[in-house]
Length: 255
Image (cartoon, rainbow, N blue to C red; front, side):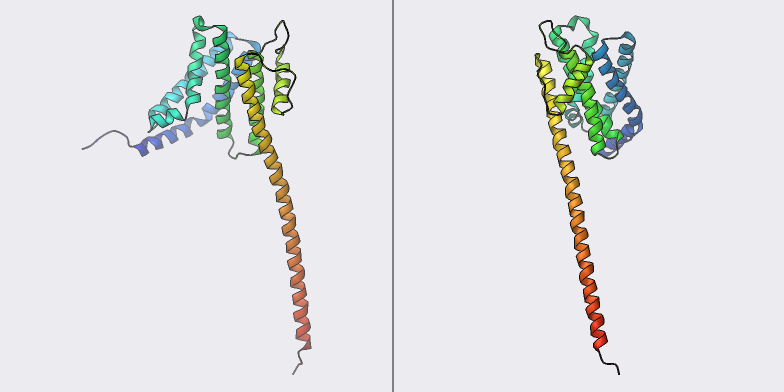
């Protein structure tokens, strides 16, 4: 019986080829999307930027739909891209003005921050061939800029005090949080607290990574030094053996 249904291996190969083909354009769109999210949270909605964002959002939906169609195992694909799927659904609620309640707006903003951070991590991971200190520093910068914009949008300045009056204030606060130093202000909204926890958790992970990197660096130096000393000792012992052998040869009576 002849069937035209592609096999699992053929679908997987087609999916990988498609991802390689669109990797470059999607990286550019991902970084542009991050910039638009930060700009919207800091300066508010601007009609031109909002239109540009809708175009990018449609491109993301088309890319996700194509990957889903080519994926040989649909359930596994969806389970591995839950955050991306939710981040694609959220902008649809922004178009429906009737759903713009204050609580819903804050919740959608939190999801947008997490979704944008997830896409940014994927873009950095794809654009950097080797993970290392450079990758971690760029990722920390991304979290700093995006997290600050999210905190500025979720925790605006209040008449009774608290909150952030400017994006610079939120940037400083997030920097201190990432550095594990803390500040004298803590978020009041539930969404702000969740974002604060996620930023602090990331900062803790970065601190552990840097500590391990420095420890590995110094241990490597010490190991190299020990090997160098051991090599010098071996050379000295070899010289002594050669000298003893030469002395023994000189003592042999010549015929």
